[in-house]
Amino acid sequence: MQPPNLVNQDALPWSGFEHTCVRDLAWCLFSPSLIAPSFSRYAPDARPAPADAIATLSRLDRNPTSLQEWMATCASRRLGFRFEHFWHFWWSQRQTECDECLYNFQLNLGGKTAGELDAISWYPQRRTVVHTELAVKFYLGIDSAQLPPERRSTDRLSWVGPGIQDRLDLKWQQLEQRQLTRLRDSAAQQLLPSHWHWERLQTQAIVRGRLYFPLHYLLDNRLGDWSLLAPDYLNPNHLSGYWLSLRQLAELDLQACLSTGVPGGKRPLAWVILERDQWFASLRVSRELFSQTPSKLLANQEQLLVQLSAHFKHYRQPLQFALLEFCETHWCERIRCFVVPDHWPGSTVP
Image 1: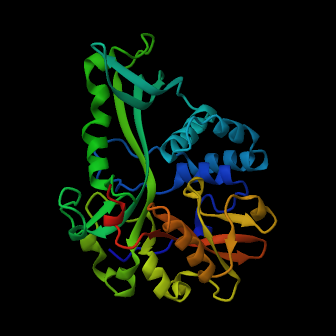
Image 2: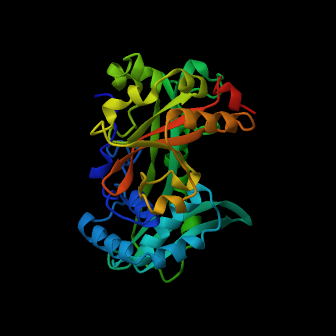
Image 3: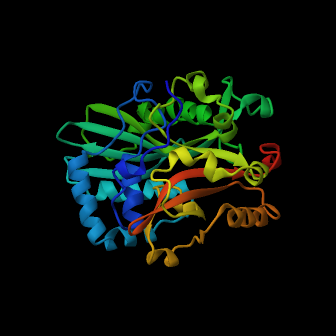
């Protein structure tokens, strides 16, 4: 297995769409799973047929009002809820043999809540019920020895959330051993609508996100043995980026370090700190529209460092930024990184 490559953003299915909400929807549908397809014992990822999906997404890009209104009804700004809400929109629009869908279905057994199912779909023609669990995660790879013993995995790298409260291997274990098995219980099946006549239960997990490798591994040429760092369940085609500490950012010419990942080399470059609702699809924003986005273009790494230093004086949570390149009419994202506080992860442990 080769070291993780920076994905050519222009080749991805969402790269040409103009509206952010349509790009994010396409990202939810088409971005690679974090879990290797061959590793899961459950049904393949629910990826729509590309040709039909691109036609529908193109129509939405010309008139995104229905999608924008739908996303405005999302009850939370948390990324997991937004991810589910995008999928719910897609399922509500699709023309398939699916007759009914239930979302966030509560399992009340014996007067107690036994859990919640993200989505259940009934296919009467196939006499099949499909149970789907959805997850979107962003994990940073860190040497396991740098984590407290109770938080580290048995692998050389532990894949943890920015606040190290969440870990990829534990999340997948919970999905596979608990959440995806809940509807197998006969008592839980009795809670499904009585008119759902079915003979077959199909279960699937839709897991999207990005993995961020420590930038010092790249600089120290330690990614040559990346296969030793990747657990068996990891999809080798996942989306990736890098992470570094605030001190490392201050000491490095980051543009020079990452210059091999930026095509062209002579086009205007800019930096932008990402809001959480910009974590899904890579950025592609026209010069005219960028003034209307919640983020501000920064002309150089010095301006980026000033903004990040001000943030870390008061807050501990890591931030993401992107390096953008101006291509004809748009600023297009080329590289995405997390910046963590100095002494991370200890600086984020409560």
